[in-house]
Image (cartoon, rainbow, N blue to C red; front, top):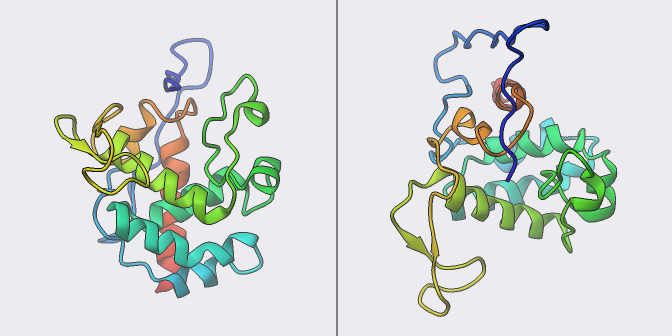
Length: 192
């Protein structure tokens, strides 16, 4: 768990969030990430064309549908963390989200996954359970049908089902939510 860094208070630049988009329905840091994004695998594939992430377009949509997480968010998060599929953590570990990477030793600490799809599936489940679902309920552990294993509590890092809510505990970069929102909005805009 990494706490979000506070903006500088004195002696340095002041963080000023970019203005919210004016287009109705635009993806933003306050978009509810538990709602379907409506993005298709074809749209994601077209946006990711030329990147190894293009092959994961359907996996983003499927994981989003299964875990009630915006596929648009998942794809934008992967683009940010992998640099369109060029980061060493992605290339060596199939880790599309920098999952487990800590600022002090990101490559060493980042989790390894057997495939891109395995990473997408696990992180979508983890984000849904821990960041996007309020505390107070229990769900089956990852890859365990309901009732076959002890359940896990929800809402461990819940601060609202938005990028701003996630940014409290997910990333140390105070601009993380805004960067992902900007990429998701580009994908959405490209779809026309």
